[in-house]
Image (cartoon, rainbow, N blue to C red):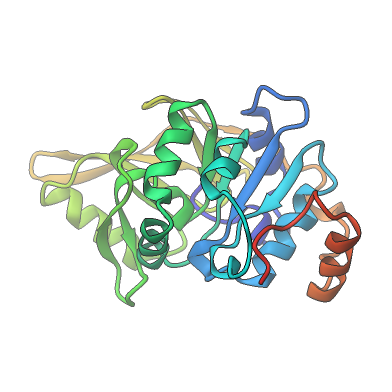
Length: 257
């Protein structure tokens, strides 16, 4: 996903429901990785506000808060039906993942059929390369490379990132996709199945090098609709959520130190 999702106002609710359909289970286990934001409490709160009411079993794996916890990270990730990666600093996220061996665990989860998804940094990480602004100006950074393409997010919203991506493709970067906020690309293996959107005007773009220049072509995008986006309950406060998770011990957040 190019961005948005449950982090936007109003939320792209149709994308959340679409993510759950990628699992075979009628009540899928979905694990949120907010590493790119430094495990920001606000992102975790919004994740649970979005997914707790849905037919799924959500958890948040917060790598910055594992101190004193006896948690088998690999076992937990491999036991999921869906892994959802949040946005933030792609560069910092990948560095933390390497320390916790998630750069090995997540490809293993993919091989086992776990659906991998995410928005912004959580999208670009699955590709060979993405355009990050982790260090300020947009720049090229390598991802996990599960998908042998490149990716740039916030396509229509961030002209500087878009231009940096087009320049990189023109100079020889592998072809890939630019994706708007509220839009997702679905892959089966490394093949694109479809582009979907929770926003009527948003889209995805195929970006290729042609005659020494980068060309971006809009691809067909299926509008999912967002019938309940404005009818969602208000996002709870952080302390309120913590009390709720404590009361529902065993079904909520992981790694709070």
